[in-house]
Amino acid sequence: MMGGAYHCLDVRRPSVLLLWQSEIGEKRSIGGGRSVFNVMGVGSGGGEIDLEMLAQLRLKHPHVKVDNEVVEPSVDMLHKYKVRVSTTPDLDHINFKWNKMTASEFEKHWQEKNPGKKMDFIHMIQMLYYVKDPEATVTFFRSLLHKDGKLLIILVSEISQCVTTGDIKTFLDTEGIPYRNYELLSQMDITECFTEGDQVGELLLDFLTEVMEFSKNAPEDLKKGVLDILRHPECSKEVDGRIIFNNNLGVLVVEP
Image (cartoon, rainbow, N blue to C red; front, side):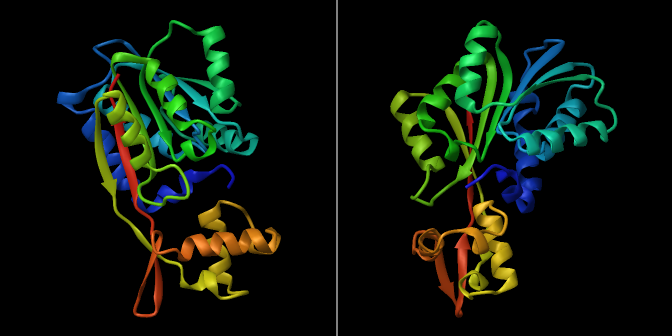
């Protein structure tokens, strides 16, 4: 898979934002009354969700300034993010810091440049699939939180072939780390993915794998492997002759 996993959140964006509004509500407000909030997006993609969450933060805390660290290894995604910032009004209160690097590269960079700086809010949306050690990654970024900070993690909730929120919850429970757990329910009809040459199916495969023209460019063994995974009972079920993919996402809000 490649970057850009934010696209998978499009249909559930209102739910994500409602959860975010809840987390910055009166009883769970971040920032501790500080005049500057430190926010970080790890694997921010093109910045769609980032800017919407920052807009909600502005509504809740209209007088604070924001230092926003953007961690994203894709040149293309960073460019899209910067374009989006340049065309979005009322962002003068936000200082964007661009970090074109992976999570592991950023960890080394941060330890060298900002060892004492703490964050009020860190979000890692659909990015833990791409790191070698998800538990170590969560541990590092959680260590950057203020005492009242929050780490938001969003992942698929049930597919066993990649890291899931279930895996992260097991780790957090073992370590005794407090968190809150939510579920964003979604299903997708992927029947056309299994019809060779079907245009809709090819677009769906592009969407699910996050690879442009996956069907045309992927080796046959890789394509077969992906289709087998999508058809697996843990991932999909058959309803009235249609193949329905479980596209649920789990949301974890991790405490310091």
